[in-house]
Image (cartoon, rainbow, N blue to C red; front, side, top):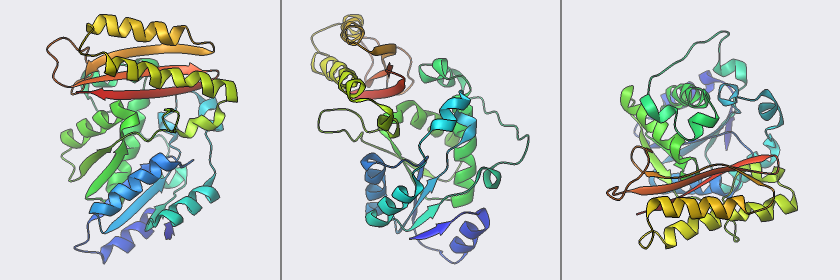
Length: 276
């Protein structure tokens, strides 16, 4: 695997790579099997796969959260090599950002719903860095996990508005055997937190299993009650939304998605489940 740390190295490498389909998996590191599943999916349809590891400061609302974000780069490199990734792009902050850079792209209500309400400004930071990474790597296809469902929609909106020549692929959530969605943040969970956090996937599964027998308000209330009854879990939201807009779903919505965010102890977790 080749490791590049500058834009120039990436540009030089791809200057001579005409005719190859490039797949891209942008990450913030602390890799787990969910990330590796994205690499594997990219390998099935692309000639070369680039993974980026960059902990992006502009998408963190809380400086402490940025500071404590895990950065096990040696372990990440080993995982990527074992997975057969072709290129790792691992730039510094100064390689990506100039001083006092400004960015804003109006994507309407999508930015302010759900995650956007609890993490104001977060999605502007996400779009800013993904736009930069797309312009550096120039991938044909980019692969993102379904766990960050709203993020995928935000990036899709940006790609459409800016007419970027990249095809976005959403890949299914990878779960631990007990149902917990894989996340880089899971390493912060104590044993008790981790056990209590299982209520998130249980509530989502209950909603999916009972979707055709209960009304949407009843489903939502039952899921909230399940989560609120679990010790050590602080619910931020549980919503059943239109899978195309993330506005609240109703009886006529064709594509539904249930989304949840909560704190297990001090660790914030998100999860979702498609309900077709």
